[in-house]
Amino acid sequence: MEKFRLAIGLHNHQPVGNFDHIFEEAYLRAYLPFIKLLVQYENIRLSLHQSGILWNWQEQNHPEFLDMVKKLVEQNRVELMTGGFYEPILPSIPDRDKKGQIELLNQYLKDKFNVEPTGLWLAERVWEPHLSKVIRQSGAQYLP
Image (cartoon, rainbow, N blue to C red):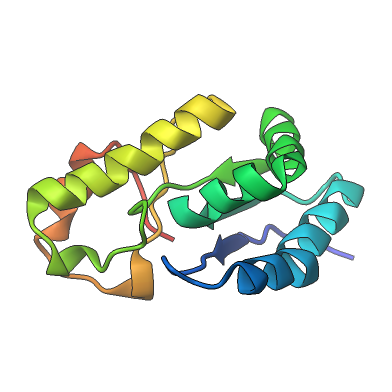
């Protein structure tokens, strides 16, 4: 069989104020099983974006999840992407807030995983041409 390359990007999010049991159910049924499965397949690499809300919840409730992701990042198997920390629709907020949202998630990823993300997840895929300036200033080099 001929080999080929496939780009895989995964996005996980829970909205601010969501019920704790919803976070927990999503963690047990989706986030954790996926990462456990990924650990088993050493040849698979992917990009992962999670909102800051979700990272915070996982850090507080299941820090072992961050440990698993960190190990995958260190093995160059997972690339972490940035975005707005609270998953805002970037065109709907002022530029200073766009920048602040992205910087907040960048700093979180630097502090927890020692990475400076180059990919940026655009919430709800909402694009406006003026976003390119703020995105470029954030250090992001691509959008999936």
